[in-house]
Image (cartoon, rainbow, N blue to C red; front, top):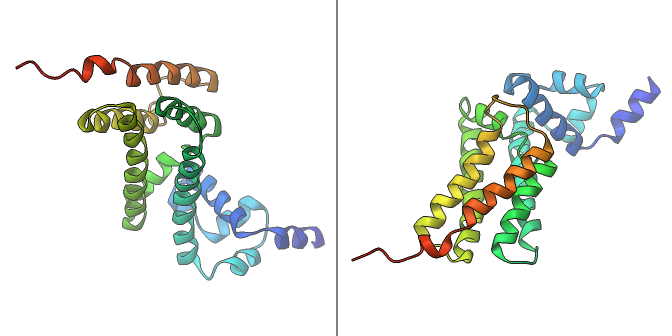
Length: 198
């Protein structure tokens, strides 16, 4: 009992939010409740009420955490990378695959179908991510419409990878595909930027 109490005292809000995302991935939003998350962490509910006033605050903090930790901080980290825009795009795609920063995206989108709060956050995150990638294509020299379409192709592929069950994907296979996809999306700039014939 003493060991459990000590473990409970060491837990912070970050621990609860991470476990809540894992629970969301396994069971959907219906599983994200105090009792269930506490059971997964093998602790009592006392720690929860030390960090969160109630489930409403917990849910709002969870949405904020997903947006901040898996979008804003990643963008901030990658924006400081040196190199050409095309190299930054490749680094972004590889970072996502290697760190599985997209592993909760499907669960969040399923949640968004049932809850307007979640839908609002997902829409905002999509806009941020698409804008970030679009700006990289613009810096590569693509025209605005081309940059818009290419950013959507790059982003929708990442989102779609987790919704298709046709094959098991290893990290190695994902990284190989990323290099080819990157080449296809960033290549042929001279041809596609050629002015239309009169």
